[in-house]
Length: 558
Image (cartoon, rainbow, N blue to C red; front, side, top):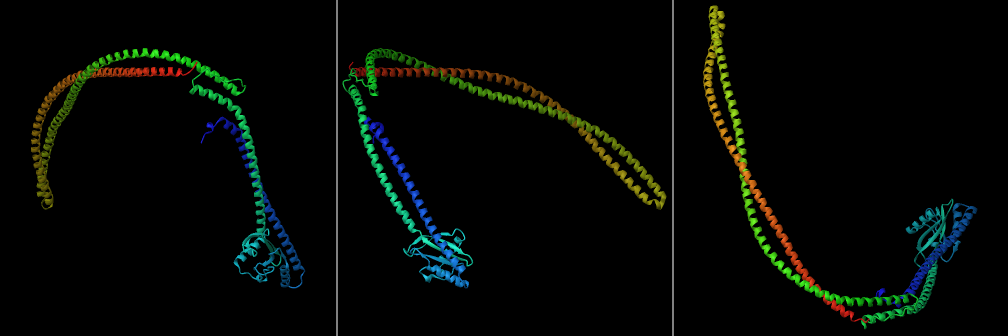
C-alpha cells in the first residue's frame, strides 16, 4: 500500500479537494442522523409517557366515578349495613368498561371480591399470589392509589404489565378499584418506533447520495485543477531525467514565463542548472590538480617510509640494551632487599638484646634492693631478739620472785595449821607454775640464741649475695653498652643498604620509564608506519576518486 507522500501530485490535489468534502458530508450525516435518532427516542419516550398518563387519568376518573356512586348508594340506601353492601356489590357487578376490564371490591379480610362477568370468583380468595396483590393494593390505596404489577391476560394467555387504581370506602374498610393492561401502549410505541426508523433510514440514504454526487463533482474539479499544475511538473521531471540519465546536457532550460509558483520554480531551476554547470567545471579542474598533488604525495610517503624503517632498527637496539640494564638493576635491587631484610632482622635482634639487658638490669636492681631490705630486716630481727632476751630475763626474775613468794606462803600456811591448808595448796600450785614459767623461759632463751646465730649467718650470706648481684649488674651493663654499639653499627649498615636499594629502585624506575618512553616511540613509529600506509592507501583512493570524478565530469556537456 502506497503512502500518501508516494502518491502522484494530481492524485493528491484531487484528494485534497474531494476528500475534505466527503469527510465533512460524512460528519454532517453522522451528526444529523445522531440528532434525528435522539429526537426520535425522546419523542417515543414522550409518547409512551403521554399514553400511560392518559390511561391512568381515564382509569382514575372511572374509579372515582364508581366510588362516588357507591358512596351515594351507601349513604342513601335504607336498611342494615349488609343490605347496603349487597346493593353496592350488585351495582359494581353492573359496571364494565372495555372488553376484559372490570371493577373489583375487597374488605380487609380479603372477602367479597366481585368480578364482572365471572361470579365464580366472588367470595373469599385462597390464592397466595392474589392475597399478596390485594395487600399491595391496600397499601397503594392509602398512598397515591396507583399500583403497577404483572398479571395474566385471559385474552392472550400471557403475563402482561398492568396498572390499577384503588380507593378506600370509609366506614366499611373496603377497597374499590379497577385495572387495565398496558400492552397496547407498548404496541403503539413500537409502531411509532418502526415508522421513525424507516424515516431515519430514508434520510441516511438521501444524505449518502447527495454526498457521493458532491464528491464526484469536486473530484472532477480537482482533476481539472491538477492538470494545470502537473503539466509544468512533468516538463521539469523530463528535463531532469535527461540531465541524469541522458547525454548530460547542462545547456537545456525550462520556460519561465508563468507568473505563478510553477513559473518561479522554473526560474530557480534554471539558476540551479547554471550553478551545477559552474560546479562541474570547477570539479573538473580540481580533479586534475588533485591528481598532480597525489603523485607528489606518493613520493613523500615513500621517503618517509624509508626513514621510519631506520628509526625502528635503532629503537630495537636501544630496547635490547634497556632490557639488559633493567634485568641487572632488578637483580641488584633483589640482593639489596635481601640484605636489607637481614640487617633489619639483626637490628631487631640487637634491639631485643638491649631491651632484655635493660630489663635484666632493672630486675637485678630490684633484686639488690630486695636483698638490702632483707638484710636490714634480718638485722632488725637480731635487735628484736635482744629485746626478747631482756624480756626473758625479766620473766626469770619474776618467776624466781614468785617461787620465793610461794615458798613463803607455804611456810605461813604450815604455821596456820588446819586453816592454812587450802592456801598451802594454792601456794604450791603457784610455785609449780613459776617453775614451769622459768623452764619455758629457759627454752625460749635457747631457741632465741640459736635464732640470733642463724640471723647473723643469714646477714653474712645476704651481704655476699648483694656483692655478687652488684658484680652481675656491672657485667649486664657492659653487655648493654656493647649491644648498643652493635645496634648503632647495624642501623648504620641498614641505612646504607636502604640508600643503595632506593638508588637501585630509582635507577630501575628510570630505566623502566625510559623503556616506556621507548615503547611509546616504537608505538609512535608503528603508528607513523600505519599512518603512512593509510596515507598511501588514501592517496591511491584519492587518485582513483579523482579519476572517477574526471570520468563523471566528462559525461556532462557545457
